Amino acid sequence: MQKLLTKVRHEKIKNELAIHGSMGNPVTFGSEVQLMHVESKSFLCGSNICSQNTKIGYQCTLSQWFSKRMIFKIIPKLKSRNEGEYIQYRDMIIFENIENTSYLSFSYDQEV
Image (cartoon, rainbow, N blue to C red; front, side, top):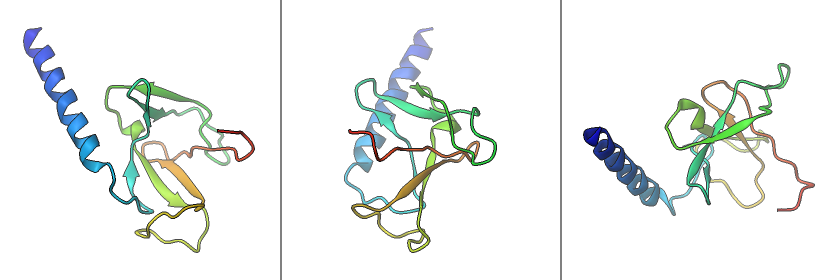
């Protein structure tokens, strides 16, 4: 049990170093990212519960244990943007879950 706890601590430290090392880097279309909930330090996970015709995910969960469902690819909503280009202010983006090819949906009419 002690070895397991030590490995978990080392894994958390490596993850935090990786997160801090990537901060400030420009994000481009086609990048694979994880979305972190700031307060809990948990990552957003896509689920298999989604609309069958448009593959929009209806339910997401938070988790601190790694899963492929945590990885989202940033794709442009408009065809005028290409993979590898920098994401700019007011660009329309879509987060595609790489595990189940479903999409996150955001609403413009809700205040943030």
